[in-house]
Image 1 (cartoon, rainbow, N blue to C red):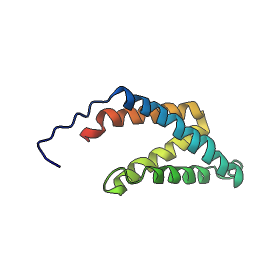
Image 2 (image 1 turned 30 degrees about the horizontal axis):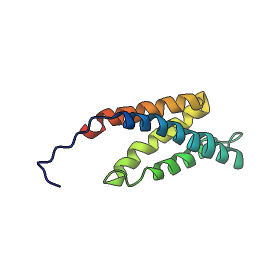
Image 3 (image 1 turned 90 degrees about the vertical axis):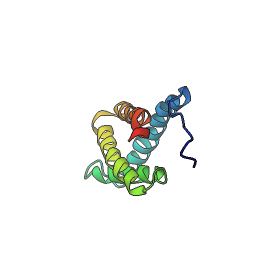
Amino acid sequence: MDPNIVVDMTPTFISWVIVIEGAIIEEITYRLGIQNFFASKFKFFRNNYWGAIIISSLLWTFAHANTIDPEWIKFAQIFPLGLALGYAFRKYGIEVCILVHALFNALMLMFGPGL
């Protein structure tokens, strides 16, 4: 890539829509769907719900793989967030997860290119 090329990284309307839409779709899929599936399938509700949180967080993390180089940085960033979202879902519900996820996405959209 030519070092003299300037790329405008200003967030657009479409990028803001993706921030919100992505949070909604991913939280419904990974927390409401996958996490609840594993919790009920393996009876984590009565025993140790953290197993379901860890499984859904790992799947969510791998879904975000290949988005940054080196990949371990993305894993170190996304996996702990997945655990926090899984816990938030269990304790506070899907709405809080969507809100926190959208906030994280918005912060990455605004400040991510400069990190």
